[in-house]
Image (cartoon, rainbow, N blue to C red; front, top):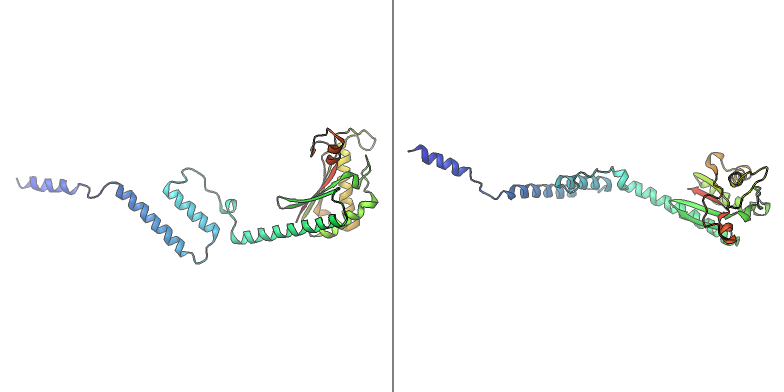
Amino acid sequence: MAEEPQKQAEEEDDTPTAPAWMATFSDMMTLLMCFFILIMSFSTLELDKFKMAMGSLKGAFGVLGVQKMLRPEQSWFSPSAQSVYSMKQKSVLEHMEKLRSVVDNNKLNDKVDVFMSEGQVFVEIRDSMLFEPGNASVKPSFAKFLSIIARTVLRDAKQIVVEGYTDDTPIHTEKYPSNWELSTDRAVQVVKYFVDQENVPPSKLSAAGYGEFRPLQPNTSAENRAANRRVLLKIEI
């Protein structure tokens, strides 16, 4: 008879003293406490490390599921990288404004566009300004403009790509069997001018010709065709 009360007492001891959800809730509170202690421990907050810690904690809570964590350099800039990026953007803007001033001072707004995209400066020149129809020799009257560009920005540039474009008007000459040859030669002549006349290091320069195959406008009017005939300088500062 004495064994029955003892057995009954052991069975009563196995009865949960708190709801089952309390264990999960306690774990969550512990993780939250660790999270806030982690935040307080940063004497100098480094954004990339902070983001990694946030991602780890989210993963622990199951928020990210099976989503792959990205490396910090793929997702966020560190403070030092942000500083370098800001300085580069400032430099690009300064060079773009210098070139725009040159265009304004020489009253070439109808022939030259200067703009910025993807951290680069672009100078778009109408082909009529630099070349005679069907020709790739740079006009002496506007060669000085290329010199001004070189002295204003190209010597500070890391890389310069010169691209030639035409409209869809066919060309069949002994020298230029197609618009590809013409557009490429025009780009090359501009590159050679920068090298020969302005001493821009050849290692910074490259040339490409696209013929009529990358038009800005449909080749449906004389105005549109004129817009498509152009030389584009892509300048990386």
